Amino acid sequence: YTLIDTDRWEFSLYGDTIIACTDTEPPQKYEVGTDTRFSDASAHAPKAVIVETVKEFTMVGDIFGRGNNVGIGGEGAVHWSEIGSPTSWPTVGTDAALAVESDYQLLEGDGGPITDIVAASTFTIVFRERQVWRADYVGKPEIFAFRKLDKTRGCVIPGAAISVGGLVYFPSKSGWLVTNGAQVTPIGHEKIDRWWKAGLSIEHISRISVAHSPSHQSIFWSVPFDSSTTPNLVIGYQYEIRRWYKINEALEWIVTVLPAGGSLDDAPYATQDMDVNSPTGLGDVAIDGLGGTAVELLGGFDPMIGSRPGWIVRVTSEKGKQWLIGVTPEPAKKFRVWTLNEVHWENWVGGLYPNWMYDGDNPDEYYKLCETAKLLRDKELSDGD
Image (cartoon, rainbow, N blue to C red; front, top):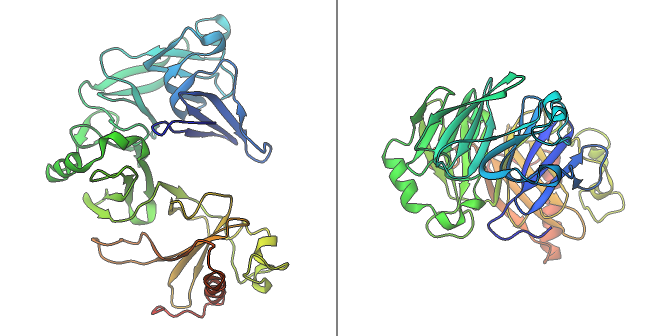
């Protein structure tokens, strides 16, 4: 697929099915554990800028009709799949569609394009650029009921809203806002909103991403700031104390990750060579189970990692210091090591701090990193290292 610089893929998970959407390509599906590559989700599913799993439906917004649904569309429209089947999109308005509760809704007013759809605890928020709507599942024949919560403010950045604890946080043209499904409330405290509006690189807002860190009770947005064409700043909001802070780190994509349980001290990893080029090294061992217990972590991608399938390992020293080691396999041989530290609010607040990286050009540095990883595995590093 070839997307222009301002386009992006949006993803939604329905059971074991990943649905991917963009406005220039047909929607794609991927069955976890079965498929080896993405394929067309349906000949009749519309192209769309936004996608979300809403109860037992896949809902898309800012749509371009396809197949039997070619006649539907619109930047302010949403369309949802058959109930219980994210890859079934019957012809809108037919008895067959009504029977499986699939339909289409064009939202009224001049609110601009749909910029996000966010499923919260008991309701769903549909954002337009200048409006906020609430959607509630009510069953046949209406299926979803839509109610406008705000007629002038919406989410200005596609995909930048996020649900945490039954509240939905989002950036608008006027500043930062939150909705509980009944009303919309400012959280930017004037100074933050002025700083945000003055520094945001508006031409590159399609590069913004958002993630939640439960352990820090914080939401993070990775944004292009001060005329940057790529994300160069992470903005954090700790919702329990309503405090804002910033992290000077360039992350092209920020995500919440859920590592599986495991330990480098357990078989077969404890006896493995840390050199991924070795015949008995970690490069030949299935290490998907590493990474700690099922605790959500904050993760990020930049050009140094994530370019190929790889792995991330979290290890803890005897004194409790935590480390992450990220590796991409041959032929990339790209590494990054992070420390996870509780420090000052003005710095990282427990975020990921890159302190060493290797890009595959220098063999001496490559083996130095392998040795560093081995020391981490053997818990020989002190908290001062």
